Length: 445
Length: 185
Image (cartoon, rainbow over all chains, first blue to last red; front, side, top):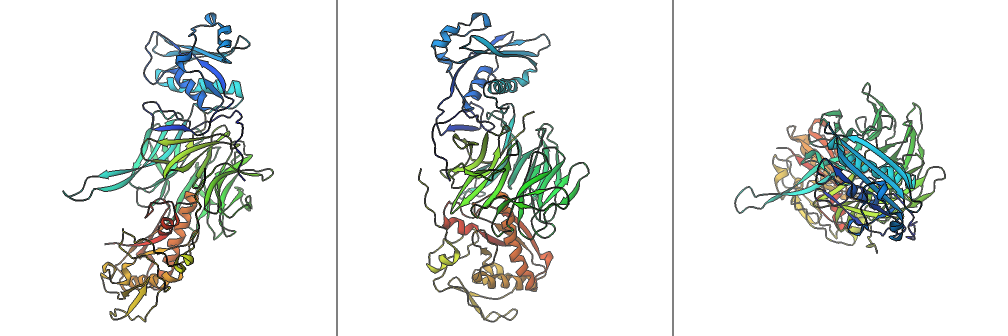
């Protein structure tokens, strides 16, 4: 049953919270207001010894992250009543009158070895004292990353939520490319181009890891955030690849006859679960990366697919049609484990993701013709439908578990959307061109 | 925000109310359903040209000569089998069509097909990959039973990734729940 939209509590939106700066590919539309957001002022950082490069305005990045978190309402730069550069010249009384609860100031300084020293301080305006302050010595190329880390520190200190902004997201995009007619007077052809992309959590630096005329599916991150596993049809048949996002090195890890699909990396990094049909019908297998041994987990003539790991890497949830219709089951990876059914409500439950704390799952719940994202608390099996559908799919949790990102349709376009884990706060994120789906967040390092 | 009320129309209902589904432009096959019901099948002897069979209201010639699959008047020109939602069962009206293809493959050892499985866009992507694979496997099983051999058939499942028709209603979905026989040159 749908949760009523009432007064919104503070909730952090993470992962695919993407702003619309000049270089971003993804843009964000806030579909619901942010009541109760805490007023905060982020003063432009002072630059010493170097000029601020474009797109590396630390205070702008931080303000943007804080706004997107849903918890904070940063003062627009033009409304800043003062621009203090050091703790000594902060006039707390004036900030109190301006209605600001917290204040962030900072600086960036070029060091002799060409590194940058970035410092920030967070002040509690009401108490007129510093809450938090850090100094970082970094390479210039890490400036945006440090800005996101500052956002994470502030969010964590003021809300208790664990970090998420200093991370990456991956997703699949499709675009129709028009090709000129082969002959004059002929019809131009359109073909679909599929891309696997990785971007900063605010949409900056989208980078294409793979472009293909054939489908790409199911990207999933390694626990160290350095690699992606995914399915590519580039060779005419689906194959599972592991791809180092920094070196570009790629390795094919399954290439069996039939299905090679739904790969999922275990949280301890030791296994990749995968769906194969090489032994007669779609079943879950686990591939141990250390020695490339494969072990079959499910043995049933029905469809068994879409494995998703529990945080202890000792069991996983999956979709099975063994009861006649797709439902979510759980199975341990120890030999001899039998699956147990988790979902009983409705006749289509599939594509589960496990929350980082292992206490709940998010999944696709079909009822009639509407497919929505629902969550279930594993302890008491309490189910809650979070979204409206009608064609929602691919739910994934943000690294701190407070948000679920998923794929949806908006006016016939495939977009990403994010909903808070309690269903109260929603956002849509759309590509400027083309369509986007199958999001995955990298774990925060 | 009101959701459009979408009625799930099962294939039987689609046939019963006689609604016409748009032709599939990609292969040129006629996919309109027929008020009069499913196919009638005459008796077949190998290579005979004078028998006809009806599929979806049109009379087709049945013959298994080389090139029959490219002849628009031949039953073998139809190369798409449609399915019900979340089902990989071959509907009655397509069983004979699949059998004809099986016999063709049996007679021409050098003929081969890619058997492509597809679903509509609803539900989750990877489940749909498995469902589409099942659809292709169901067709393959029937082809083998008619004498086609294993190495003439390569199966690939695209799930919901390659729809034939873009659309968010049952009309489009019905045309996307399919298995396609793609003959190699």
